[in-house]
Length: 439
Figure 1: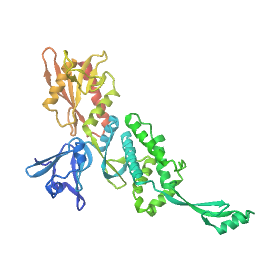
Figure 2 (figure 1 turned 90 degrees about the horizontal axis):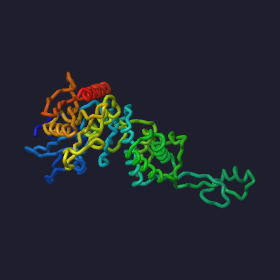
Figure 3 (figure 1 turned 135 degrees about the vertical axis):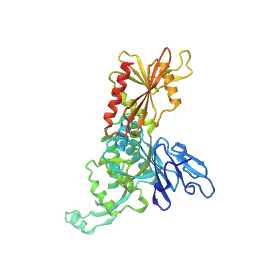
Figure 4 (figure 1 turned 135 degrees about the horizontal axis):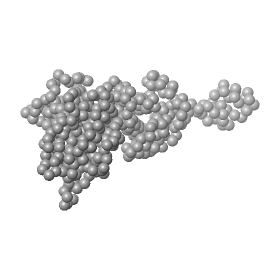
């Protein structure tokens, strides 16, 4: 199998660790000794296959990897990291992810570094909170850090270390000859580091924007459960702990056995400062679980939400839920499920469409969409495809099919490279509205 990228595109991170840069839906050949172990077996993390993140094949003496529809950093094994980049600009991608309201998948088996971004995204906040929960669970498994804190008290009998100077000034001088000033030490979790973490949990629960959906409910449920583990820690809403925390980090004074606290402290500070992760840049700001995004699924959800939020001149239904129907007229064996079904203002179905995140539609894609159009009685079928090159026309007429019931078939190429993505979206909506009302 031929490779789209050559080996010189590899950047070395460490002597035994290599990062291969590749775009979505591309092939790359990996040197055999990076993948094949001493036993002769292919050594790839099981999570890669469990989540179908990439396809791996061995042909003509070479290991070939196909990236597929997932983007993000994927660790294949201890030696190889695959950095799968989107073809769309990162700003457009984050806009699409936000509109799609799709989950960013966390790969807990591998951590990477992130920078900080100015791009606002509800999905990125979900991802950040999800990573925070992963770090919290790791902290709880390792143990909540406790310290000895000095405590002064006036007592009737010796308990702890007697402070003679304070006994004289605070007891004898004030005519309390039967009392002693003592210094004791409490072994407690109620210190500035844990106060920051507890405040951050509270911040996530009450200060971040209210999210909708099952994902948000699950995040909040997990946060509430973890919050209870910090019952003995003060919730300091004044954030007086910040100065002491900064000094601890600056002095590098967390014990080695509690070094796992550094990452969650840095993450907590970014969350309460309302920072947003930069999924593209690796600037060593913070270490968190890696992520992957299924761009094909995101593309489909993005278009559905785009159409539903801009319905003028047509009504749109999700063919996978409220719009699906039986394929044949005389039995229920199969279902017709185009991605989108459009009605005109008189509630007549005029158009069906499918989103296909690929360079070009296959023959089977056309057959499927034509059969759905016929089942719904639609006169127009549109296959919506992403485009990463400049085209003169977005809507391309493919042809007419049918005798008594004629169907006009089109491809629509959505320009995801355009910096003005809102304009591109409006052009798509205008085109669909025109087709529906002229059918």
